[in-house]
Amino acid sequence: MKKIIECVPNFSEGRDLEKIEKIVNPFRGKDGVKLLDYQRDEDHNRLVVTVVGEPEPLKEAVIEAMGVAIREIDMTKHQGQHPRMGAIDVVPFIPIKNVSMTEAIELSKEVAKEAAEKYNLPIFLYEKSATRPERQNLAKIRKGEFEGMEEKLKDPDWKPDFGPDKVHPTAGVTAVGARMPLVAFNVNLSTDNLEIANQIARRVRHISGGLRYCKAIGIELKDRGIVQVSMNMTDYTKTALYRVFELIRIEARRYGVNIVGSEIIGLVPMEALIDTAVYYLGVEDFSMEQILETRIME
Image (cartoon, rainbow, N blue to C red; front, side, top):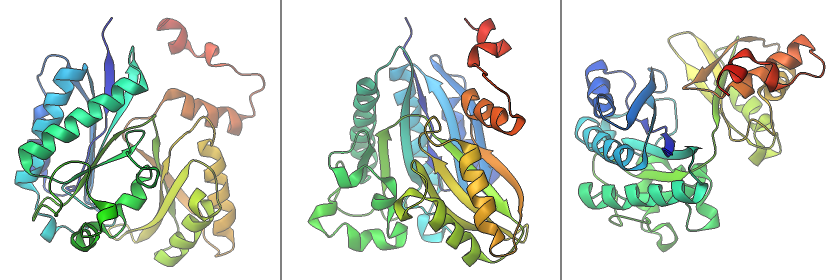
């Protein structure tokens, strides 16, 4: 049986199409690897790639793409709305088929070790791969972002798991790990006031007393003249998308602001959307077994 793992690397480039194609190319035309999707965002200045494959060829493709990103991206010139600390900001591995979480963790460690040695890049292990409890949360590792990493790495408590104890001069720092599937879910608001988005993000995210399995920040979309609450839903089976959507709607009312749309970055499990559709349609006693595609794929 083939072992299939998903990888969703995030690169700090969302504007230069030529650079983006160079970064994505290592995932094309390789046996044992399938490029599913890649999306860029100019405001976030970020590229999110979704790829699946067998462990060994996937590892080789990811490491190759990391090398391209290091050559093409200069973090000293990078500006964007999304928090970031490196050219290859984060590389998560997700077990999909015939693969255990333990195997995904092992693959993440192999990629981190080889990439750190090959590119002289400081790398932290995070989420399920973390070597310390405080490193499980990516936000804690990324705190300070690229500009603050040089000082942060001087602290012995923040010694990288692999690679040098100092920031790569142009590629910064990278986090690699294994995790369960998450949904990158953004909700857009009818205002250009970033503080409103920040306040709402504080009320919905778990770390500030909001919903469990929700990470959230406020983002400014300058080209559209609006702001958004940008979120990672780390377990959609326990905190559904409709719950955070409705909570944002409630919190926005106090500022006289409406929701004007939402977006999903990258791919999303069918169950996450079905769960939301069932809620808004008020469907009773619905089961995933009633989904046509589910029965076809059995």
